[in-house]
Image (cartoon, rainbow, N blue to C red; front, side, top):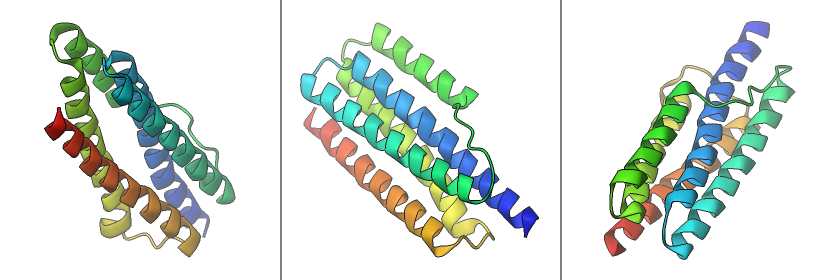
Length: 151
């Protein structure tokens, strides 16, 4: 049972890091966007991801483990790329939308990896949280794609 709790906590900590990266990525996108509407949208998404992180941290704690509050090196590199792209490209809004789509696709892959392909059987409460978060990310990706088409 202890090994199970550890493995579940490690999986959830991976998602927590991904959400911390996404929150910071959306903040970076908001800083680089020129449209006030897009800035507001990105800040809302950053706040949503912060809530996701808190939910995951609470789940990790229920298994008796400590949530990892930092992001990943890959996330830091992605944000640096976003800043560089915004500096060089004339249309920051389109560039930020493209990067947001890439980030959401990566998040979806990670959630699906855990929910569909993992051999772990999460408690119903954990599965419910993960599915709601994954479905929200999926919808966000579609909204961002639509915003990109409008742009």
